Length: 77
Image 1 (spheres, rainbow, N blue to C red):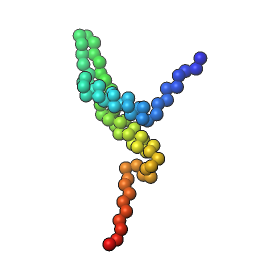
Image 2: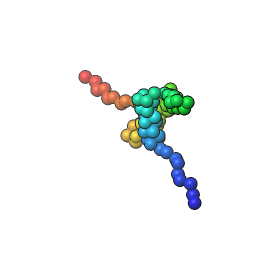
Image 3: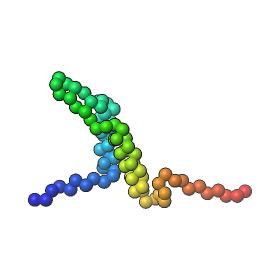
Image 4: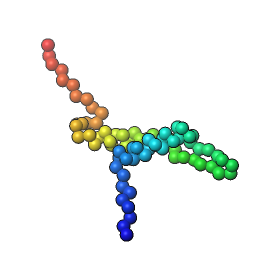
């Protein structure tokens, strides 16, 4: 029996990272309940990952020659 494919595309990872960031923003970075505690992923690292993944997703758009660049045409008078 082969192992399942766990390779994620940047768009899928971006969705997961967004969900993790949302969880931290709503529920907090960490909490303690009795003698148990939970610490979620580092928010700063998640934000960095999100920026990198968003750039990758934007770069996948075939209509874009250079990600983040704009083209303008100026005609003389």
